[in-house]
Length: 68
Image (cartoon, rainbow, N blue to C red; front, side, top):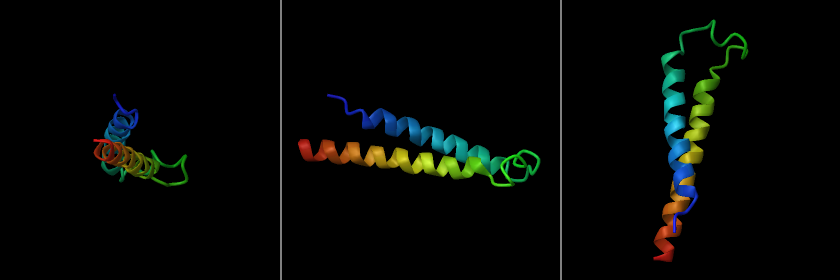
């Protein structure tokens, strides 16, 4: 049986990496971040999504390991 945490973990981890890389690539574009008060929200949300995705993958792996 497939644990729902596995695909959610993969999805959030992949999106978190993509958004973080985009935030790092556009870190010097001050015009882009003027509406967000100069805060590079892409890096912040990318890291949060990556941490959440890795947490879901860890929980899915731990559940699979204990049930086997």
